[in-house]
Image (cartoon, rainbow, N blue to C red):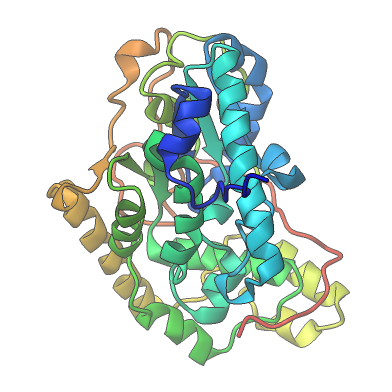
Length: 357
């Protein structure tokens, strides 16, 4: 009897011998609260058009139906059972990638931010994707040298954490206390640490990074970055639709009152604006951290990543609308003329109450 091969740890050459050359795999790793859902919705809406252009899509709707089972859980929760499921998932990933190649696909774009972690773990551990290396290494075994490009959106730390906190409260968590807020300001990890971790797992992949503040409302531009311009010239719909915005103050107060917590609701600032849980000094510190991340990226990022700040893919996208920045009330990093946007409030009114810490 032939011993079974663990596809999650077997050398890639074993699989290549069986299936031959496969398509380029492009990983879109988010990050969370960086217009990731907007991009995924845009991709899903245009899936048929992109398929005809040779681009296959693996979105959360596909990856959550068993394809990534055993690969996205917290590393501390791993058991022998989840290890077996992860090995099976690696095999399924390779089979599905080969299926895409046999259909004539040139690229497989995989968009799933949970490959690098989850917002709740960021908040509970008060760190920016602290387990990224252990989480993402499980996918290296599945995609290996066939991952040619990685896309990552980053965001000013003050608005990133504020959006994550607003989403957590809307999902049932209590408002954070001052000590919890301070831990987020002083936490040690920056976007450059996230990028270093990604490069360590996928050293041969080109890592393209773009600022949320520049491309949040431009999912077609993000697609062009991910695909290397392969999507240029296609008739795509839903280019300017914003999905899953963080709930604003009026909605958060309504949620807290419905949960029977009027005291917390009254502690929030009045008005319909975005919630900013940080004081002026904390905001300044967080924005300074982001400026340092951007400066590192602009200075070549030690050769690990490329920062995309301008519409460098535009020649391949005929008839595309001129780029716009988004509402600068969230951050002061990008300057220039802005078209005001006010996305609808989001959040889950029926969530159960929990803890962030």
